[in-house]
Amino acid sequence: MKFLLLLPLLFVTACSTPSSSTGRSELGNRPGPRGFHTVVIDAGHGGSDSGAVSRVTGDMEKTLTLDTARRVQDELGGSFRVVQLRTSDTFVDLDDRVVQASRAGDVLVSIHYNAGPSGMRGPETFFWRVDSYSLAKRLQQQLAAAIPGESGNRGLVRRRLRLTRNPSIPCVLVECGYLSNPSEARLCADPGYRQRLARAIASAIRDQAARGDAGMGPLPRHIDAPPSRATDARE
Ligand SMILES: [Zn+2]
Image (cartoon, rainbow, N blue to C red; front, side, top):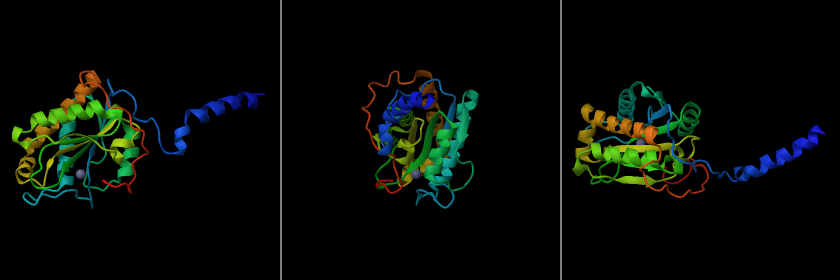
């Protein structure tokens, strides 16, 4: 009798997750977070992975991201619990970052510095999921406001990356500026400038926690897509 009663339950469970066999899911198709307490900060790159390197200042992206991540934690003060995915110059695999972030926190902000053609400059913020849109938009707006006007604004970019698709929590990736641009690389080498960037990032996180999606306009449509993998192009 007990077995018979369980059967319909199993059937319902199996039917409610038909997408798992294809790797697709509704993950991320929900409103943006509000009233959250634990912020995961990911200092991009590290260890053997230097990330971008400025030809002008010699700065390595992995060093600037770690420094900026610490500054963001300082700026957030005691109002949030902050979890850093790395606190030293160590290599952490992207998939491990996804697992750790999902386990540890309510939202993930991954911090990077950009590289590209030398004329490109300005902040750029990546998101993929519906639940990450408002936080990404706030980060991009705050960074653009903190950066001198002539730096331009690369904008908000919807891109499926391992850190913008795969965690079980809302997740965004910010590119604070182009190390390949000589004048922006010089700005990024200045600790005071990085403090301004960190203040902007912290302010966006605080606004998101206080207001959720309010004031950010209509949410983008959900795009059903499988998890991002290391073998995907554009990563
Ligand atoms: Zn990077």
